[in-house]
Amino acid sequence: MCRNYEIFEVLPNGSPQRVAVASGLESAKLKLHDLASRSRNECYAADPRTRQIVVHMNVPPTKRQAVKRVFQISYDEQSGIQRAKLLMSYGYDAVSVISNEPAKFLLSGLLTGSERFDLFIIGHAAPEESRQEIAAWLKVKYPKAKVLALNPPDQQIFSADFNVRQDDPESWLPIVRHQLAKSADSPQPQ
Image 1 (cartoon, rainbow, N blue to C red):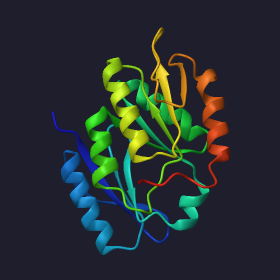
Image 2: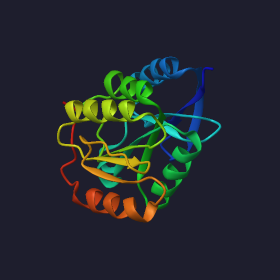
Image 3: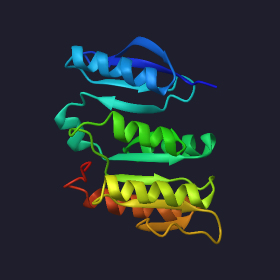
Image 4: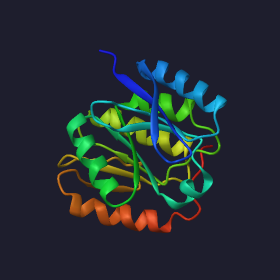
């Protein structure tokens, strides 16, 4: 099943205007890249059902520096939505994807030197091997970035910087707040 994504351009008055709809992440990437290359305005792609933004482009430097960005790799859509809402309620920009391949696709093929994330979160609802693999990949791609793994009982992701139980936001939110408070010099892609 291919997800649909809406492509928006933020007008100078700050209001978002939907300019396209794309079927699938690759099509959304192409349409967003095309729009961003023709406009100086902020542009983004979002899932119309969940309202989750999956990619931003042309983010103004002042906004980019002011808002801390979290890239979340979820394996359970509802948990990902809940975490993103929680993160946004604290004022963070949460970009969410479902599973490793979309994460790699976005982080490899779309990001430019102006894109940065202050923290990566790996969800709990995937086999340990998949979670280990994405954590190792993130550490190669973003060696200075911090990775927080939300784990089921009796599981840890050894290449993650932080391992906590997934069912307790009170155990991982302090880590998020602390790491994002420290991230004045945000990690850049390598």
